[in-house]
Length: 265
Image 1: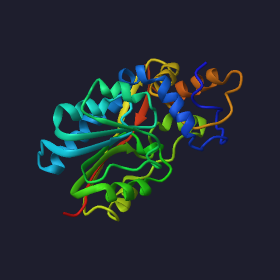
Image 2: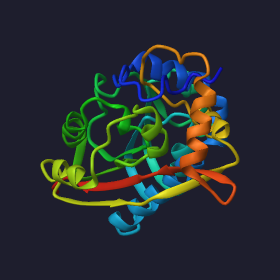
Image 3: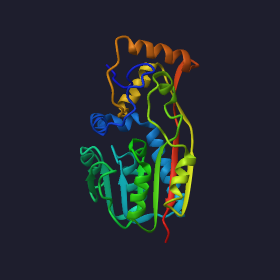
Image 4: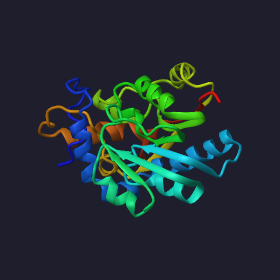
């Protein structure tokens, strides 16, 4: 059974469970890169934003990527930038072996980014599709600001309200996202210059069951609660088809956000 979202219009689980997040992403490490089509696009776009923001810079002395996961962003960083030291982090310890294949000249720091110490005097701190899983984004911004070298860059992607809205409208459950304007407001407290850009991406699937399979293969979700009752999948599929069908397909909406900021020289 696909235990992804529990209960139509249930309000029982909106609490982030870090142990559940770790367990589900660990299980899906092998399938994640192939299923995470949006996250692959986001990785490309984020690095384009870094290029634009840095004036086409091709190298950084010390890079720290947190939430590296299966290495979708990591592999692109290795190909695009020269570096002297590369620090990687993820909540899932098993990610070390995956990322080691992409960069043998790196140091892996396992653990929750809200609890670990960040490498200091880094020139680039970067993260792809991770911050929606933290409890306190402002705390992360504070830690990044403190760890960056003068003139260092913080770049990340996350998601805005409306992300996976079809599933949330049916189940009443999902993550709480910050509006891009709210991210900008937080960012200006810690960074001198910044840009915050959002977009909307719609994926199409043949059936609602494929939507759930897609979410399962990308490790969603880390919200805890009771398992679905009998007949839940059929009810979910019927309502999803009725509300979100288009030209024989059903859609799923992603709302990526790209943030780039710099600390003072």
